[in-house]
Amino acid sequence: MHVTGGDTPGPAPARRAANGRWRNPRLVLGLVLVLGSAVLGGWLLAAARDATDYWAVGSSVRWGDPVRADDLVVVSARVDGATARTLVPVAAGVPAGTWTRDMVPGALATRDAIADDVESGSELPLGVASGAMPPDLRAGQQVDVWATGDDREPMRVRRLATAARVIAVSEADGTGRRTLVVDAGPGGPRPETIAAAAADRLTVVRVR
Image 1 (cartoon, one colour):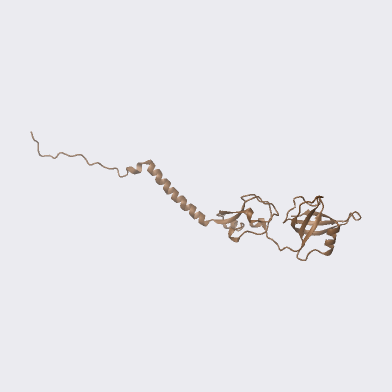
Image 2 (cartoon, rainbow, N blue to C red):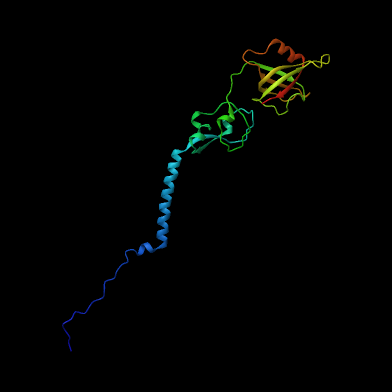
């Protein structure tokens, strides 16, 4: 028997889940990583643009040592205005002077850690006997120089130099005697100072 009068429904069209791809955890994780990298990269780039290059200590230095370019390294940092004014920027060039305190590697060089070089005057060499000066005395430090009389006048003591800057210190010779060179100032030493330095026994006291 043939039946007519109704349309037989066909198969329903397949529906594609439009948002099915977003349910893939790998895809979501990948997008998060990409976006995070982009944000972090932008932040780092902005931070690098705002950073300033400063001098830092690359190797240990000691109080009184001259400041040398070999002892310094460049570091980039972002610091506030008050702190920035205490640091030494690379743009100002290699600082000249002597260290006012011991510094360890990695420490930022501050303005108060470096004493400006002063114009040197006359150089006065002094022969100092063994045991009459600090064994670790170095250039850049300051000393008082005292002269004592000979055996005929053992109580005669006078100061030949006050806070004189040390220019150089020699190694000890065979008798332990060392040569100390100090800055005698623009006017140079007085004649009596030279006479006492040559004739009397000298004692060197480190004051800074």
